[in-house]
Length: 301
Image (cartoon, rainbow, N blue to C red; front, side, top):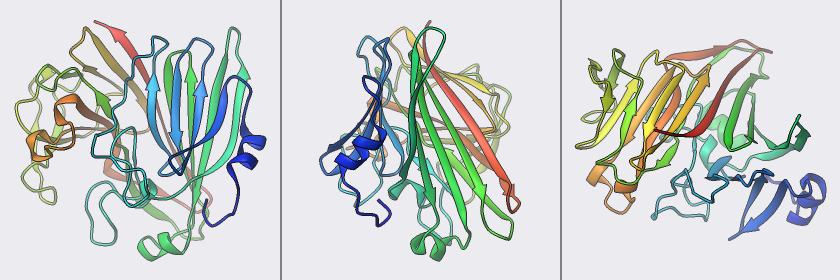
């Protein structure tokens, strides 16, 4: 991890919390498994700080990892909740969506703090600048990403701290893949009246539109950034349930489906509904920080 020779056994000794947090090696990659006493589980890979699984107490998976995903660090993990930082989308100075999703993050801490009723398992992951990142983005920073389970709810908390002596700007998103019964039956609610950027034809020159639908449905590829979106949106997954996403600090929402443009991606079985900071880049002064949070819940319709 970041050049440090540390074994899985050492990580387990330091960070495992009996019955609630477990560090494991899976196919050569290290991940942290969070286990809530209610039966909910989440898995977070250190590579990309990617939440690759979130299961309800019933055992039902909520997130989606694409069948064409690879787990050999040759590319970011396609699925789960990949990071887009310090850039959302394409740009001249670095690869698509930045570098945070294809670097190993370090474990900062783990816990299962005592709640009034049950213990909430939590892992904190940390990423700082290195020679690789400075070539693309010449700043010193500290990204702190916390993932926790509160009952069956999944919570994320991202802080970007400026450790440099000069201000910086960035855009970001959490590129959340959610499993749906069938993309033809999926519906996104809560974005009517919002101005959005349609990036399907040309991501570098999106067309500005206004959403007039109560429920966004899918009949082709979609790549839309809703600006100044509400802090609550729902994805009807077509099973009689929806994934409700509450957030603070993110400001924008992205809705993406590649449709048949990515035939090997399992496009019929997922929809990406992403919290983002894109319309107005985050500006962080030296010693200051930016913070954004999410909570995911499965609700009956």
